[in-house]
Length: 220
Image (cartoon, rainbow, N blue to C red):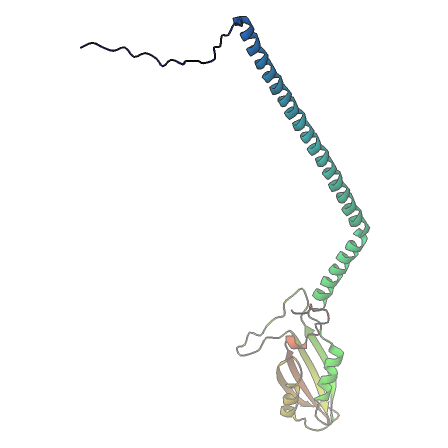
């Protein structure tokens, strides 16, 4: 069986084209295109570099401006601190004085008014002859009782009263219990003096309610 050789399609009546340019001209044209593209690329890179440099320069200028503003604000704050430095120093002194007042008067009792209150509890025909006060200080705790069932105390009043008649000590003790800061009271001996009057000794203990708290901080 014979083989039939396939013939390529023929174009009848087509336009004839013949490239008569030398190979050197083709290479030269391609070189110009490459050079032109390289030139565009170089220009593009230059534009990018210039733009980046301008951006960096603008950021540097902005940072310098921000730094100048921050430094100016700092100087303004320092000037204000110096301006009010005296006020701050005075305020610290006031705070120190107030703290000292609170400590110094923490155990203060208005003894004048308290003794007047004691006098109002005296039975008829009874007068105070002598008074001895022993109280706490801001720097030392007051000695407490060693006996059981005795309340806390911050001061002790020991006084002697003189009566023209036999004093009614129980009634007096009941009246003393109404005073602010009363903790307890103990009667001593009742003695008849050479003039015919009677002498009685009372020891009264006072608790923290009697403090004046003149400089106590509010809320404490």
